Image (cartoon, rainbow, N blue to C red; front, side, top):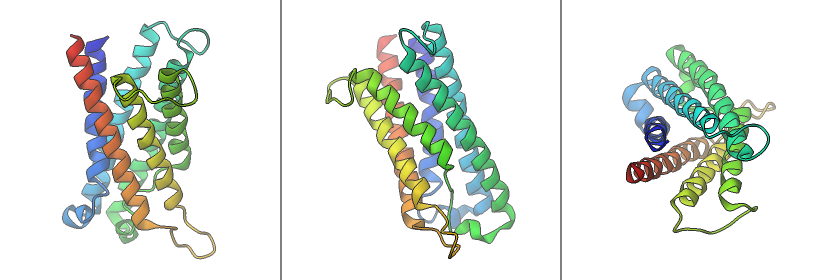
Length: 204
């Protein structure tokens, strides 16, 4: 299991790095919208690969939709669904980036449903570690991973709200906040992935 966890961490780390770099100020101007869109799409593929392995890991542990370990199972499955939605989102953004200059105004618009999936998944994982609504176990690596990933999920959710287009004006609520929280969410996921890799490496 520890070897599989290490690979899950590595895949999440690569995907998170893409989502951290992609919206970083000046990056799209440096590489162009086409390349920037590709960075997000590649990152989403690594996220999906990691989420798929995590679902396999939950299955191997004997977890299912009911019974012992049901939170881990649902957390993995809902997260996997969210990554698939991000695949669609980032692919669309990548295609738009090739021929739409408006892409430069908003690097990436996270799908609201995909972000909601991440929030549900992140909280289920956090609840599974705590055994209650909230807890503080800063010396527990498992808690650190769950907590930092939950913060990343919240950041993606805020980004989705900030990038909402107001129908009456056609403008986006807050472009800077959308990109800032996307990058911050990516950074949180990167920290969580590195912690997972370190913990899995120590267990081998």
